[in-house]
Length: 402
Image (cartoon, rainbow, N blue to C red; front, side):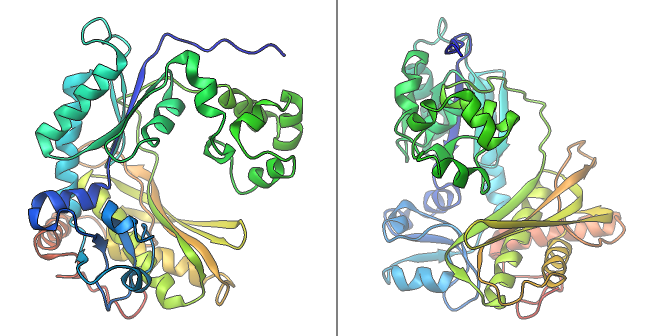
């Protein structure tokens, strides 16, 4: 089969805010800059790291690590803070506003990243590197944060490019350099490679994208299936979606974590799900999403992955409802005592809110929506944003599930 020609009509830019939550905290507290900082649970509590500064990452700390393990690795001068999701969402909105001054075609994909179509800007602004530098400078000027930017002929290349020089990076991949850019990367960065497909390629001796390129299309179709085989074949050659859709609806909101060591303690699993529910619920309320479908995701050694979902009678974005639904899904399965590698939850099945935005939610049952309920949620978010996530709970015990 002849090698496909790489389309050159598009120029896609991916923006990823560096260590977003931690960077906002260090920006707002100058005395914390340059010091290890953890956003998440506090020492002595059960819970996990939501994110951490690059100073903390040098000690091997990462998102979703149990806080007790993080504390053992970090020096005494480390700062620990609870998440302030409402404040982070406000900064995110400011950043998205900045991006809209660069290009009229902006697609927000999460609280801290977005895609832009900058294909028509080269004649107005200059080469891609100049466009990327301008985006980074405008973000820094508007909100005082750094961002990593990747630019390429499609979404896949732009996304991978933004990861190359983090933090505060800028990587441009021209179409003629896509092959060399991809070749040394692990094949697992390609879309469609999951827990079932990865071992199949490993058995063929594949380690890098360059190795994938050496396999005939028919071999990939035979081992991965027709659809995935074609998709992987094309991506290994730099071919991927180059469409940016500002109106593309968000499919779901989810949070998950991979433990550095498998976890059997139900208290840690409970607390991790509680953290995920609070993150998902807060983002959902900030973006005015309500969802009917709650999904639990869990992975055991080595890649045994299960998802369980429940459809609620009433859409919701309530932390307690999301946690209760996910925990009940976990409790209903014969998983007790099995070592867990990954756990998380999400919401989907949107129901339009007053803002006309759809959202993803995971929960079991939710109270009937009413103005008093909405005002209570807004008040609780405001209190948490000012005094910390643990300042007040809506009947949600940190010692018992549900």
